[in-house]
Length: 388
Image 1 (cartoon, rainbow, N blue to C red):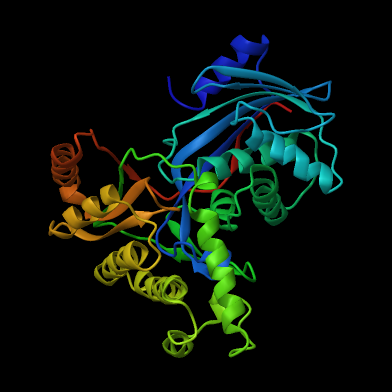
Image 2: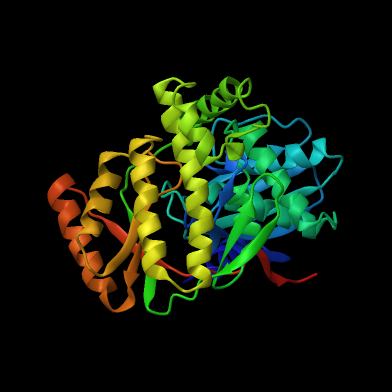
């Protein structure tokens, strides 16, 4: 049985009646533009055909009854005094309630079953999909009439404030605003965006999951953000117009080497050059120039590995292997780093051979079975079924 039938069947078994609403919330990839989002820069994400599904019904009590279908865990939580819970995963749902209440909304209780096929820990932003999907469930069930862009902002604040991860807005934006066969060029300062066509008929996007799991809230993610913010403070006396690393030009970067500690300079260098790569990638995709786009992917990985230092040996190994394969136009680590997936642009007719070669090399090097899967670019969060 496939989604969303899984969660519908599980809902009936758990609650004894069918759901009134089924929502799909996709994961996302980021084609290029890593760690630029919280520096108010440019990113190029897209929603993908891996998603979290929600089967839901309103509950006439201030309570969340939720079954996580993937691992068979059930929680019943009162919503009158929302506090983080020890189980961990329900906090992504509770954070949504918390932010809605702070914003003056009063959604009621919910019976909920959620499950999906986003690989956990692979850097495909399952957390943003959960938050985005839950917001759409409550918005729909309780007719809150919140515009989509405001839902995106609420999802980000939920992760920042309740979960404690100071992420940017990219993941939630991609999950909710995705469009089929398009990436989204997003200006993370103004939230201005445009859809960039991704008509890769001759290529396939393939993810290789290192199986190295990470918890960004406990990792170096927040440390990187703090270093970027400190770099801005160090540069401002010399460049008063710099409000974030987004404002640092290549010319300023040349001078910054004498103004910043070496570590700060490397972090700054990645952000400045990565922003430029996003804009260059958009231009390449507008021309269907996947050779140039692939070269920019490789350059992005080199920068993330050496300047921002958020890669890991497994990611570097897979990208190095991909470089030697003539069927691969480009590859890079994707996501926050320290594990997760590599994103590979592979000639469509060579995908099977590519995956076989990567799996064999990875098994030999690390003794671990490598999971590879292709993804397509799809629409953002949407209602699959409504009985209202």
